[in-house]
Amino acid sequence: MEWLKSIVETCAHVEILTADNAASAYKIALDLTIDLFLVDIVLEPDIMRDSSGLKFVADMRQISKYGFTPVIFITSLEDSKLYTYEELHCYGYIEKPFDEDRVRRLVTGSLKFPGSDRGRKMLYFRKDGIILAADREVIVYAEMVNQQLYLHTMEERSMHVPYMTLKQMIEQLDSPDIIQCSRNTIVNVAYIVNVDIPNRLIELKHGFGRLEIGLAYKRYIKEYFKICN
Image (cartoon, rainbow, N blue to C red; front, side, top):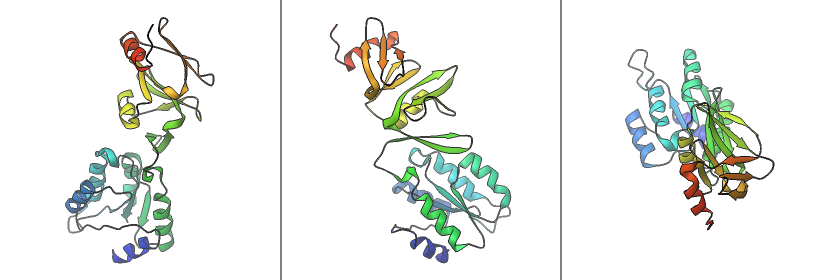
């Protein structure tokens, strides 16, 4: 693996950490914040049909900060690809024997992935096996319709977001500007043009229409906007 490490070092000025086993790698990942994982699918070559690298990444995906961190798998196992793309959402593969140009392309590309950008607040979600990202600044509102979550943004007027609840979206966005106005709806206050408390309506900018204020949220909305009447 020293040769692979030397290739990665030529791609960017980054600190490279190595681990001989999953337990050591797990501890490093908990203690620090990793921007890219390179993981061999076979971590225990002495064990027949070993694929412990897949389990390691599956464990990483259960940690909130690593939900969408790029992963490049090191493998010669062709039949692992479908699982890792659909379930673990890896960025790509480095196949043995290593192709030096491919290694550089994958590492350089993955380090540009939005998940490595700590400065902007993004919403990440999976759709059709692909990881998509939406900048919080362009999110107008989101709503649950028939138990399905829909995101409305300035870039995409309406987008279905599978595998995510409204609560999970609120937690991921983690912004005081994203407020809940009803049991099924959250809204970005930056796109609110008027709040009508008596009629329980929120009017939005840019032709996005109106949202209803739920009875249970009327007091909260009134206090948030410091409405006296």
